[in-house]
Image 1 (cartoon, helix red, strand yellow):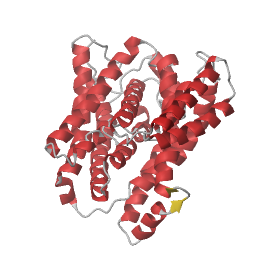
Image 2 (tube, helix red, strand yellow; image 1 turned 180 degrees about the vertical axis):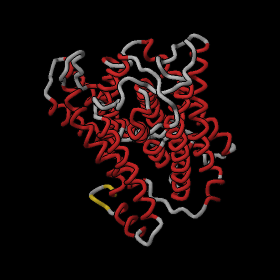
Image 3 (cartoon, one colour; image 1 turned 45 degrees about the horizontal axis):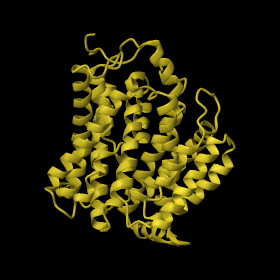
Length: 403
């Protein structure tokens, strides 16, 4: 995630633009050409499945690389550092799922959608923070990133455990053998990337044939890439650096364009249980779960409140966690086979994400400045670029809690 602030802003805008373009096209006569292009066969898969199963494996590879780096050599390298974002992320997944199940009333046909509002779209959220500039203090950026990393781990586990088809034992055995071979390369000190990448491609094919969703191959492959703790340049960091622009400016906007196209008939669509449950989970569940978990953890002494961040700021970050977009659309397509339900899930995802993003932006945008600790500025500059703080002397809120 070591990109510049402008890069984060542009990646977020690219994703927003792709989603908006898909929505416009889906509600014009061009919708037929749009759907025909997505369902066109290209070899063994349709164009849409190549995007969702193959290209999104690169997205999950990047997620895996970032998680591994942060867990062993970054902001999550100690138990204390993991505690607050882990508590917040778990609550931020559980409460939205509970709201979804409550709204849908335990309908068996809708049950598989329980995980759709549990996700956070880090690209969208960071894009909103980048648009805020110095109005988003470094500490809140760091908190949101760490929550999103734990959230990504949870989403990967959910996909692997709950959205897996019938399993093929031979393909699973082949996947395990390839994974063991890649791990062996790491153990014996192989640091060139090309053997890992060749085996990762084979691993994708094996996982695809196994019944486990093929994108999980990306995460598994990432775990075998040598990290080189403390090294400024390592195979993992080199691959992460190379993948980041390809994924954030190519794969993710393309997936957004392929997935966000849905015909909008009217606001009454939002009152159906499925879209209402998803929108409610993202907009209400995320902010309640994340904010309440952080507040309770701090008040009970289980974790420390981030420095120079007020409760108002934390509430703004909790709202931004409700931007589910990419991962929510992805899980929605896995949860249902009925296209009508998939479209309803898209509407709920778009509505909940839009509400959460707009209110989160307003909460953080209207907060007055507060002096910012030097170490937070340095760490945020490393993650978000040297221009992460337009005014390096301030964080951002006059409503900071007494310390």
